[in-house]
Image (cartoon, rainbow, N blue to C red; front, top):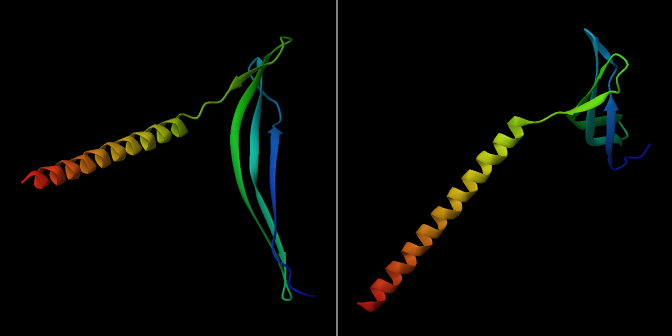
Length: 113
C-alpha cells in the first residue's frame, strides 16, 4: 500500500432534532453543523479526524393543533465579543492617529527651529 495525501472534505448540514413535549407545547430544536472531515491512508495504517461547529438556529414551537412557529435563537455572547473586539480596534486606531499626529507635530516644530 502506498501513502496518500490526506483528503479534506468540507460539509454543511441542517439538523432537526426530535420533538419534545413540554406541558401542552411541542418543542423541536434546529441547528446548523459545519466543519471539515479528513481521512488519510498510509503504509502503517489509516486515520481520520474532524472539526465541527454546531450552531443553534431556532426552536420550532407548537401548541396542540395550532400551526408550529419558529423561535429564532440569539447568541448574546458572540455579539458581546464582537462589540469588545470592535471597541479595541477603534482604540487602537485612535491611539495610532494620536501617536502619528504627535510625531508629525514634533517634526514640523523641530524643522522651524
